[in-house]
Image (cartoon, rainbow, N blue to C red):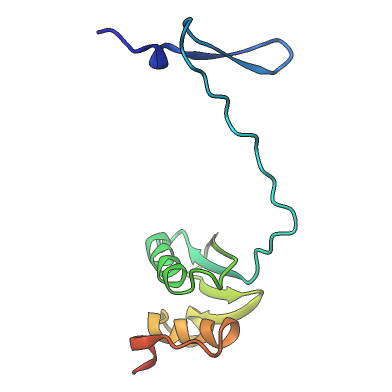
Length: 133
Protein backbone atom coordinates (compact mmCIF):
# COMPACT_ATOMS: atom_id res chain seq x y z
CA UNK A 1 0.00 0.00 0.00
CA UNK A 2 1.41 3.37 -1.01
CA UNK A 3 0.96 6.39 1.15
CA UNK A 4 0.45 9.91 -0.12
CA UNK A 5 3.24 12.48 0.29
CA UNK A 6 1.30 14.16 3.09
CA UNK A 7 1.07 10.92 5.02
CA UNK A 8 4.76 10.27 4.46
CA UNK A 9 5.84 13.50 6.15
CA UNK A 10 7.29 13.19 9.61
CA UNK A 11 8.45 15.42 12.40
CA UNK A 12 12.01 15.24 13.68
CA UNK A 13 13.40 16.85 16.80
CA UNK A 14 16.85 18.42 16.73
CA UNK A 15 19.34 18.34 19.58
CA UNK A 16 18.27 21.88 20.52
CA UNK A 17 14.70 20.73 21.17
CA UNK A 18 13.18 22.47 18.16
CA UNK A 19 11.02 20.63 15.67
CA UNK A 20 11.33 20.61 11.92
CA UNK A 21 9.06 18.99 9.38
CA UNK A 22 10.66 16.73 6.79
CA UNK A 23 8.57 16.09 3.67
CA UNK A 24 9.22 14.83 0.12
CA UNK A 25 10.11 17.49 -2.47
CA UNK A 26 7.13 19.30 -3.94
CA UNK A 27 4.93 18.71 -0.88
CA UNK A 28 3.31 21.71 0.77
CA UNK A 29 4.03 21.83 4.48
CA UNK A 30 1.89 23.93 6.77
CA UNK A 31 3.47 24.97 10.02
CA UNK A 32 1.24 24.70 13.10
CA UNK A 33 -0.23 27.88 14.53
CA UNK A 34 1.66 29.26 17.53
CA UNK A 35 0.26 28.43 20.95
CA UNK A 36 -2.03 31.08 22.37
CA UNK A 37 -1.94 31.86 26.07
CA UNK A 38 -5.08 33.58 27.27
CA UNK A 39 -4.18 36.18 29.87
CA UNK A 40 -6.90 37.85 31.86
CA UNK A 41 -9.63 35.48 30.70
CA UNK A 42 -12.06 34.90 33.52
CA UNK A 43 -12.87 31.31 34.46
CA UNK A 44 -15.46 32.40 36.95
CA UNK A 45 -17.83 31.39 38.21
CA UNK A 46 -16.25 28.00 38.97
CA UNK A 47 -18.58 25.12 39.67
CA UNK A 48 -17.17 22.03 41.36
CA UNK A 49 -18.81 18.64 41.65
CA UNK A 50 -17.00 16.51 44.20
CA UNK A 51 -17.96 12.86 43.91
CA UNK A 52 -17.04 9.63 45.68
CA UNK A 53 -14.69 7.42 43.68
CA UNK A 54 -15.28 4.49 46.05
CA UNK A 55 -19.01 4.65 45.28
CA UNK A 56 -18.29 4.98 41.53
CA UNK A 57 -20.28 8.18 41.14
CA UNK A 58 -18.14 9.61 38.33
CA UNK A 59 -20.86 8.99 35.74
CA UNK A 60 -23.48 10.78 37.89
CA UNK A 61 -21.09 13.70 38.41
CA UNK A 62 -20.28 13.89 34.69
CA UNK A 63 -23.97 13.80 33.75
CA UNK A 64 -24.71 16.59 36.25
CA UNK A 65 -21.83 18.64 34.82
CA UNK A 66 -23.10 18.08 31.27
CA UNK A 67 -26.61 19.20 32.22
CA UNK A 68 -25.31 22.38 33.87
CA UNK A 69 -22.90 23.16 31.01
CA UNK A 70 -25.68 22.65 28.47
CA UNK A 71 -28.00 24.98 30.35
CA UNK A 72 -25.45 27.66 31.32
CA UNK A 73 -23.29 27.66 28.18
CA UNK A 74 -21.98 31.21 28.56
CA UNK A 75 -22.58 31.92 32.25
CA UNK A 76 -20.25 29.27 33.73
CA UNK A 77 -16.53 29.88 33.44
CA UNK A 78 -15.42 26.43 34.52
CA UNK A 79 -16.88 23.14 35.71
CA UNK A 80 -14.57 20.78 37.58
CA UNK A 81 -15.05 17.17 38.60
CA UNK A 82 -13.25 16.60 41.89
CA UNK A 83 -12.61 13.01 43.01
CA UNK A 84 -13.29 12.34 46.68
CA UNK A 85 -14.09 9.49 49.04
CA UNK A 86 -16.44 8.67 51.89
CA UNK A 87 -19.75 8.93 50.04
CA UNK A 88 -19.35 12.58 49.10
CA UNK A 89 -21.42 14.22 46.37
CA UNK A 90 -21.20 17.98 46.80
CA UNK A 91 -21.88 20.75 44.30
CA UNK A 92 -20.09 24.04 44.97
CA UNK A 93 -20.17 27.35 43.16
CA UNK A 94 -17.18 29.60 43.87
CA UNK A 95 -16.64 27.77 47.16
CA UNK A 96 -20.26 27.99 48.33
CA UNK A 97 -21.91 24.59 48.79
CA UNK A 98 -25.14 24.48 46.80
CA UNK A 99 -25.86 20.81 47.42
CA UNK A 100 -24.42 18.20 49.75
CA UNK A 101 -25.69 14.63 49.51
CA UNK A 102 -25.06 14.08 53.22
CA UNK A 103 -26.71 17.33 54.36
CA UNK A 104 -29.73 17.04 52.04
CA UNK A 105 -29.92 13.24 52.48
CA UNK A 106 -29.75 12.38 48.78
CA UNK A 107 -28.71 13.38 45.32
CA UNK A 108 -29.96 16.61 43.74
CA UNK A 109 -32.74 16.56 41.20
CA UNK A 110 -31.43 18.42 38.17
CA UNK A 111 -34.21 21.05 37.92
CA UNK A 112 -33.82 22.37 41.51
CA UNK A 113 -30.03 22.28 41.11
CA UNK A 114 -30.27 24.36 37.94
CA UNK A 115 -32.46 26.83 39.84
CA UNK A 116 -29.87 27.10 42.63
CA UNK A 117 -27.11 27.78 40.09
CA UNK A 118 -29.29 30.20 38.10
CA UNK A 119 -30.25 32.17 41.22
CA UNK A 120 -26.56 32.91 41.82
CA UNK A 121 -25.17 33.48 38.32
CA UNK A 122 -28.13 34.64 36.18
CA UNK A 123 -31.09 35.52 38.44
CA UNK A 124 -33.17 37.05 35.63
CA UNK A 125 -32.84 34.03 33.37
CA UNK A 126 -35.86 31.86 32.58
CA UNK A 127 -35.09 28.14 32.73
CA UNK A 128 -38.16 27.15 30.74
CA UNK A 129 -39.56 23.79 31.83
CA UNK A 130 -37.06 23.57 34.72
CA UNK A 131 -38.86 26.50 36.36
CA UNK A 132 -42.30 24.87 36.08
CA UNK A 133 -42.41 22.33 38.89
